[in-house]
Image 1 (tube, rainbow, N blue to C red):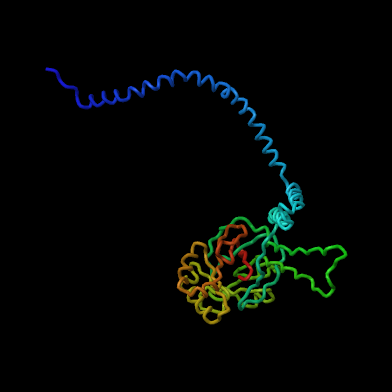
Image 2 (spheres, helix red, strand yellow; image 1 turned 90 degrees about the horizontal axis):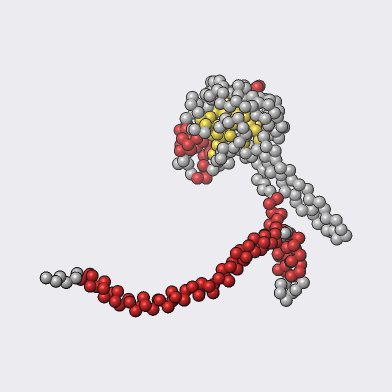
Length: 338
């Protein structure tokens, strides 16, 4: 018995029969293909030569970029300025000024306002340069770990950039005698050093700012710092709200005690600041203790952070950083206004 082909096979045969005229129409195109390729032969042969010409073109283009300079820009601006129908003199001058500003702007510097130790402390004296290094206290009233920094400091601090005097213009057209000279910008105050110790006598006499302990087992008599330029008194108990600084570390005031001390001090005087000394590792706990203070009050809390790396630096977010510990005294770098 003859079996009929499957439906799919019949559909495929019908499709091939329908496409047969299209396939037959392609035969002339394929027969003409060699002649068409031969027509493209001159164009294909010319491409390597054009590719070989490309590097010299690019080289000359880059050479033109390298030759671009301020003088050429100025010449072009001057040339355009002579053609008022195309470009006004004002636009040409703006081009020159803008170019000069871009080239000269990188030499401009910034300055911060000068400030001194505020609050109930004595005025800060200028610190002379000092080399050599000893370091921080290690006795009653403090529990700093020994040997945290091995290198002695090599300088007393960073120097303030001096204001440069501007030269008077020469020429016949001078300003009237009655005109006051332009005000010279004030030189910004530089960071300064603080020396702290349980034995202030170990601190160099040239130190301008001295910090020592006013209460606790290591309380220092006022007579030992007589004649010092500026003295910061440190409280380790938190009971002396007239002290300049509270010391938050194991064995001294806790973060909660420091928060209470700061609240009393800042509430009593709207102009006062509360300086809180603590270790870098203890800082988050103390910050959490004062987090409920009003925002305006928190801005008057100045942080003195111990980070004894042996190199002068300021921990970001702090106003002073104790970077050196030693057997005789510690050294900190403080920002103006600490």
